[in-house]
Image 1 (cartoon, one colour):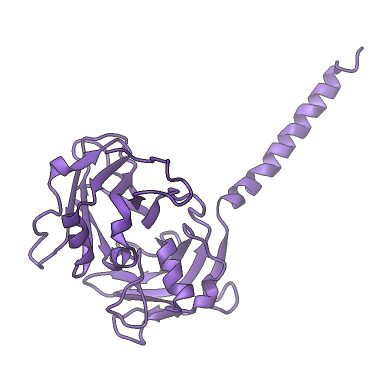
Image 2 (cartoon, one colour; image 1 turned 180 degrees about the vertical axis):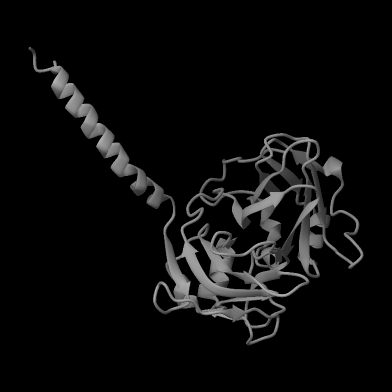
Amino acid sequence: MTRFELTAIELENMKTRLLITALLLIPMLAAAQETCTKIYDDGDVNSWSDKALSYTQGQDLFLDKAKFTSAQPGNRIKIYGFLTGGGAHKLYLGEYDPSCHLPGSDYRSINALSGENPVYFYLTEDMLKAIVTDGKDLRIFGEGITVNRVDLCTGKARGLHEAFRTIWTGFYWMDSWSTLELYKEAFTAVDLSQYQAIRFYHEAGRTDYTLNIFCVNDGLGLSTPLVTAEHIHKTATFADVLLTDAVRTALGNLTTALYIQMDKGAGSAFNFTDIVLIPKHVDGCDNCFFVTY
């Protein structure tokens, strides 16, 4: 027998060792998918501390900037708790003044909240700058919601759309006329004159969906769209809108939020995943053309 040949017993033993190794790797691979650090409550890992949310200053859930010094864009905040009372159940990420929102935060309606159904917010570059560098810290405001635990998890870390600038990221379920309310701070935190287009990523896998973008909600309904359908370039994975002077002005003058509305049409519902700004050029790469219009 040459050294490249194996007996039946040796082959069977090798198969067994490979199977055992593969089984041992399964939990390791699963664990590598996401790691989380508890950032509220600060007590024992099994402790719980209820915090009823409000829109009132000082009655929010406060998370110190020191908890985010090692965070990366794409990491996510995992919020546990439960719904209380009737009416609206909403929350958002803000700063000391409840009227000021962190860049990349959206006004989230919650249908269910529990250990099995946590709520996720994903951190953007601008959000982390506001929290840590600018010293805004992070506060969770809301209504009809009690929070009892918050984790900081790896999420989409290093999985954002380079060299574009991601101003919102997450997984927002788009069904029939679903609307993501992205607070204006996502746009006021950047110099829009340096970007040529805004891109909306999704997982529809088709183009027969509807996308509407609104700058105003007057309480009776959404007003005139920011752009009409012929100015939206749709693909199976994203939709682009050119940043004309008029569009930049409208985005810079948002009163509250940008409303991104999508309808699944005849197809299945899908995730909306990112909003990014496409730069006019990339420093150190003047001949790179990522997008041509």
